[in-house]
Amino acid sequence: MSETIKGLHRSHRCTEVSNKNIGEEVTVMGWVQKRRNLGSLIFIDLRDRSGLVQIVFDENDGEIFEKAGTLRSEFVIAVRGEVRARDGAVNEDMETGDIEITAKELRILSESETPPFPVEEGANTKEELRLKYRYLDLRKQNLQNNLKLRSDVTTFVRSFMANEGFLEIETPTLCKSTPEGARDYLVPSRVHPGHFYALPQSPQLFKQLLMCSGCDRYIQIAKCYRDEDLRADRQPEFTQIDMEMSFVEAEDVMEVNERMLQALFKEVLDVDVQIPFERMPWQEAMDRFGTDKPDTRFEMELTDVTEVVKGCGFGVFAGPADTDGCSVRGLNVKGQGAMSRKKIDKLVESAKGNGAKGLAYLCINEDGTYKSTFAKFMSEEELEALVTAMKGEPGDLLLFAADTNKIVWNVLGALRLELGKELELIDESKYNFLWVVDFPQFEWSDEEERFIAMHHPFTMPKEEDIQYIESDPGKVHAEAYDIVLNGSEIGGGSVRIHQTDVQEKMLRAIGFTDEQAHEQFGFLIDAFKYGVPPHAGLAYGLDRLVMHMANEDNIREVIAFPKNKDAVCLMSEAPGTVDEKQLDELSLKTVETEE
Ligand code: ASP
Image (cartoon, rainbow, N blue to C red; front, top):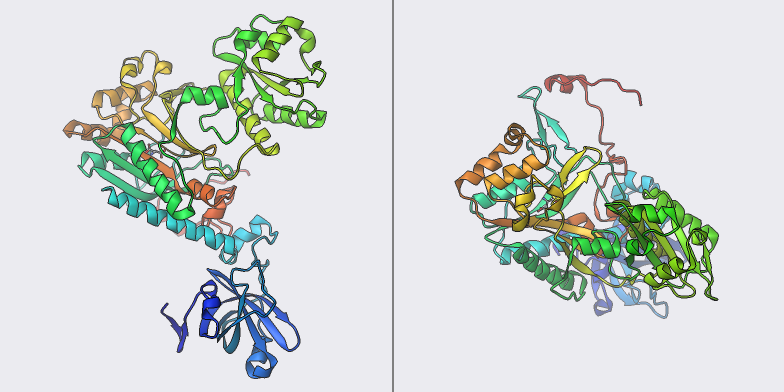
């Protein structure tokens, strides 16, 4: 290392000092985590980004012993001293627990006020306070590890992809607003009053144009912005590992990414991942798991019992069973037939939270009798048929949802995950990757009363379905693929449309007039006129990928300076108001709204 402060040269990071250095003189610098006074000895836990090492000051050392007595938490110090074995007092919980440094020189490089919370991993501090003082929070070992992991991931991906012939190319972040998709963040133009740039939701159009430019293989670690209501794993600004390839089909994109992920997990986590990953059609994912991002680390799959309950005496089942686009499906919660009423009520509540009108259940008692909300409405034969279809055995709990397919999938998919966690069915040590493929090209938006693109409007429909784009959009499948890890969509991409006429059809199908399409995407459609290679690509959510690799539940733990759930940076207090002069320059006026 080559850091020097006024003649004192930092020789090691704290945890780089080991029993190999016993007897040697070292110099370490960092923050005081803890001071313990034992009368004739003072112990300091010194912290830097690598971790902790113990420093000892002896009363026989006179002046520096006295100086050590003034040290407080978070003082920044430099210590020169000799490495010694800890006689009989090895701390097994500490990486450097078998050694300590006996101080010969101590310099206080800066002092600290009492920090607003203990800067220690595991300290039970409210997240609001942690985010307000994020620079202190980041000193904690787990967060330092997460930042290091994140840096390792991007470094590895860049070099792997460079070896595969990808060029790293930056695309603009002041773009044209394209309201299809999420809400844009807008930036007013000073020199063009009344005009706005948008921050990119993704570099999608630019990366496709780079393919038109002949760049062949592109990659970028790109900041993206989406003004959506935030959920636990979303941030208004986030980072993508974004890529695009020319002269390829879907399989080529998947193949290079499988190799990249396999190598990444080996290099960074020393985890072996088998490739190729399973490719699961969207329909199968929905039918078996109720979601297009299935967690395949545990079973408890959905069973479609629509045909079995058709015409049965229980109207709640018989109605949907006889209606197009609706179904009746169930989950067999093995061995949970004796679940308490209170717990079942909680499941009913969460089903309602996901859009169900209710949740029907049937407990199969150990003696083979049933306890159920609906048994009385069904004949014995009907019940038997249902239980058989569900592979129900004594001691099982059967849960049923009956509604539109969308609601049924949503409700049972969420219950499956909730129960998987609660009953500890998930093998947390596993990394289960899979591709979900054959997505529908469109989904119906009740809110907008029109079809919208399930991925985005530049996704190529399956060739045989192109004929239905305008006449029967619901029938069209897409050349799209999502990469799913342990029930989380960590990335997605598609083969792109590269024909002007198909692109125009696609935009018309989602409600654009030709004028609107040209106004917003004219430059892309024009570019297609001048020779465009077939191309395809993919983007990962870097934050989410790193969150899984770091085994964190919350995306904020892997972002240096995240925003909170209200899209606010509690530390810098962004967003803030601006003064009148700035607004005047931008020809903007704000209006008061009632909060
Ligand atoms: N641009 C897409 C997205 O942000 C990913 C892709 O199709 O490459 O979701």
